[in-house]
Length: 253
Image 1 (cartoon, rainbow, N blue to C red):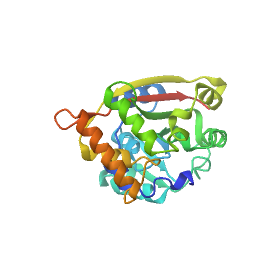
Image 2 (cartoon, rainbow, N blue to C red; image 1 turned 120 degrees about the vertical axis):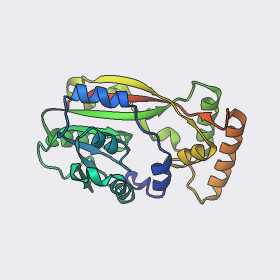
Image 3 (cartoon, one colour; image 1 turned 90 degrees about the vertical axis):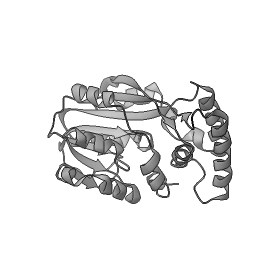
Image 4 (cartoon, rainbow, N blue to C red; image 1 turned 30 degrees about the vertical axis):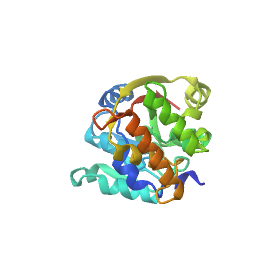
């Protein structure tokens, strides 16, 4: 499947159930990128605008670049009227953003870089950045070993999603980041991002992933039954732990 279309039938679950990102990460990124209110940032692979809205909340002007029509429309609808003047929606890809040379002070990409062509993206980011501008790559990386629920959930995903092993941030290695960032130099920071979620949130969050059975399919019925059994086994006060380590990779290209 074309990576730009993978989430078209999952947008509502993505909007409702995907996690946000730690405030401490935004604080550190603002300091390290040396950006301030009013600066222009390209959020590339912006999806439904989760990270975009965090940047808008800090007074930044955001160009949200997203090739998937359904996700981009959801992002547009989620921006508050008060912030529309700071926001521009751009129907384009990471490899061809359509932005002008040197148009942005910084580039960010949250939960998306693993879908890009890294070589073409490196050239494009270098083109649209002002001299000295930085690139930040961000992921919420799910904890898969920290507790019994996490271990069993990971096994369940492997059982129901044959291509899970081939997609996502986990396929990236240090050498990929060294090749992307200039002179192989970048900074990596991580943050705890912990949630306790309900059964509805568990099923919705799992369904929002592009590699799990799609809602409405026979496979999804079985998938939801398995998730319900797992939830019942591990729930504490009607919640299970769904924790992340949020990673920030930052450098110049």
